[in-house]
Length: 113
Length: 111
Image (cartoon, rainbow over all chains, first blue to last red; front, side):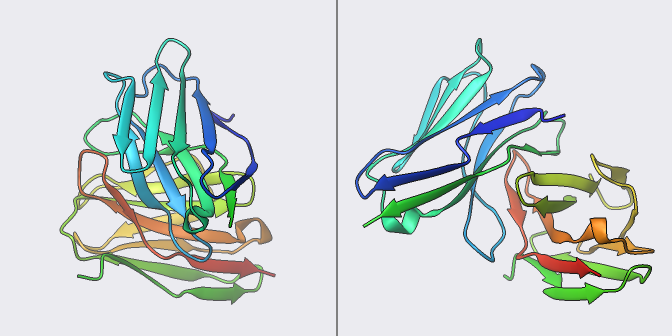
């Protein structure tokens, strides 16, 4: 049972475009929603995260939008660059002092020059 | 400061063989985790250790055992490897407030 559903599976945008990756969750007890970036052959790296008390969070060119009533959250990458080409994972967890992350299935992003 | 280190980086096993994946972190984190990554399935939690001396099952624990040797080290053991355990295994540690750091992974093939 996939508790966090992620789409699209893959995405191609031109340099400067704004790719958007969407995730939906089922468990309303989730209260921490991070995004991870993974390059080939590497481990995932935390990119940005949000908690349900805010609807949007920006860090540099990366923005998370969060809709609690719809149980959805999304990642926007502004002014995308070829170096952003990677696989992106959304995740969710219940903050109990430690994080048992439930991951989406990933989105492979290609930013063409 | 090496972060989270894993050994080995690659391993090929025959069905029925056993092995231990090693993980260490030098960030003095309390919580450590083992995930496996399979194509099209994201990462799934195998076992975790919320603090030194404690371990607990995650989403997919069958066929695995773990040991939290001390605060730094958290190992994953496959007692009798099966082809279904072919995967990339990631160890992670958490600083708190959701800051989870992943190691570089171990790519395991079971023939």
